[in-house]
Length: 179
Length: 343
Image (tube, rainbow over all chains, first blue to last red; front, side, top):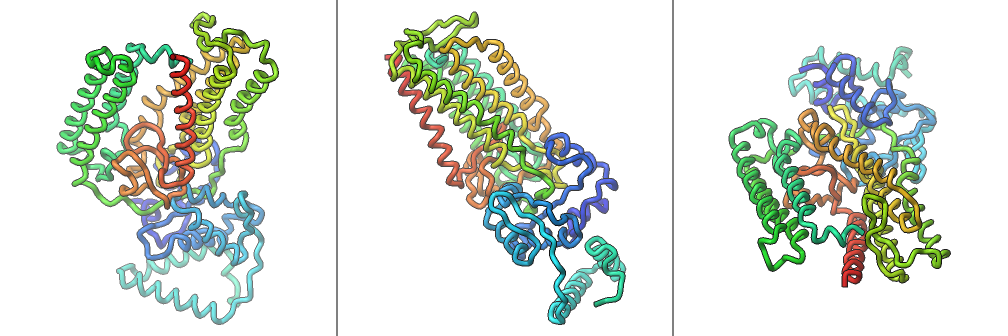
């Protein structure tokens, strides 16, 4: 199994699919370009993947993945997300599910919702981190690490995944002194 | 108004029966690798001897359906002689349906749970708005013809031509009365509106999935071209009584329609199923009798058929029923109109 296939099957992994490492997927990308005419040549797909069998509600899966893309600056202020209808149709879920995800992100200050025109990504000032948020983060992280360690993932793999995710999402942001 | 002529043209209906049966014969090959007779299965099952046996029985049924249809078309059943053409089509379809349902029942024990992961590409943009204009343009043409007819009633030919031969000359007429003239235009307008609705639906209310797992894109461009072509053809027909010679346009549209149909069957998305994702992002339980898609939780109004070419309506949506009402209105009106002229 290639790394890309692993990435596609692992729900914990939220990275972009690397087309250059897998000729099959590169073919898929070129096919999409040829057939759709709407995905510009050279643009990277921004895939949202949901699992209907997961205990996490679908609207939260969508919101979490779009938030990850926003944090990683895959969408920049001024860009538009597709309309609620388009995402709901492509995922095969109800409009309300996607609308709820968009509403959550709008409440967090990431999006400006415009009826019928999709959602506009807005620039968002990072709020001052409260100790409560940091504690909650630390607790969730510990719990997640314990969970995957108990499932047999090696400490090296956990570290590598953690670093990879942090680099993908934060870039060079996290290199300075912690706040 | 070709209907009046073809109603009793058994060679035409025989051809329809043969084409339908041929496509139905090929259907098992055209389904996705993870779907057999509208049931989600392991792709390995499609290569098994058991599946081959089910397909063999199904195909025997399709051959019987074609034979039954042809027998009716050529007058073997006296009771339906007056309607032997449409009756042949119905008989063929009913026998095919029975063969399909039997094959589906035999496949059901091999059903597996479909994957529950779905993808959407957020970088995909909706089709440009100009395509919506292309869909609406023929309807505007029809409205203009209606307006011209209303304001220039005396200039309309009497009797009013409703059918033309290959030489471009009219060969069938009706009396120029408001009921007849507006009836013809209303019927053509209803059919054009229905085709426009389908074209628009395929563009904006159907799944255009380009996710990473999709190794083949199922964008229904050719289907849209097919419906748009038919819509333009119908709208152009409405201008014929006004004296326009649209034969070159008709020939081009007919050539495009034929090419699109062949593409869809032979090399298009339908023919390329083997290279595509095994599943189709629809749950098995939403496929009633394997043919009708009923899923109120799915926002898509049109979904790809599991068994058959093209797309089908999501009957779980209120809009679908509006569409059905829209479809039945012109068809019912057309039927009543043709019967009134025939009498």
